[in-house]
Image 1 (cartoon, one colour):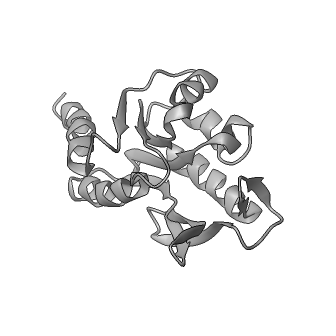
Image 2 (cartoon, helix red, strand yellow; image 1 turned 60 degrees about the vertical axis):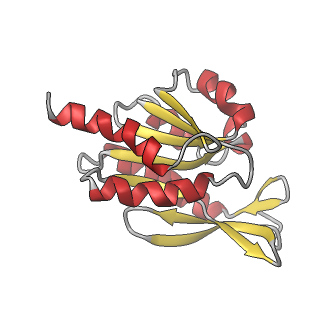
Length: 178
């Protein structure tokens, strides 16, 4: 079951995730995957960090000041971190102790078969519940590429962490009561 969280750049997708993950954890839902908080310099986004949710560790993901890696727009993505992120997703989706996966974000690189695409090919075939962050213009193309219908689509303009948790948490409560 794959949920999508969507919103334009700067709309608070990662902020919502950073609020949601502790709520999930406090409810006994073990959450894996990663978020990608922005790095800001002089009021402008200069990069992203990959934050491993389980291990609470950060890795440099993308920067504007370091050309070289996989380019997406004005950002150069660190190849080592992309490899690490794919391994993390492959391993965590198989971990029976992890209930829920977060992937921040699925974008143009993945649509070209790069970025997290290798792991997404595996994740979309698993029964483990997941939340993928996707820009609004890619909601349908992502579902078509990975051949799934979203279990729910949360828009940052209409949802906060509590309302997202109410939907996701109810699924886990339902499973526990079966």
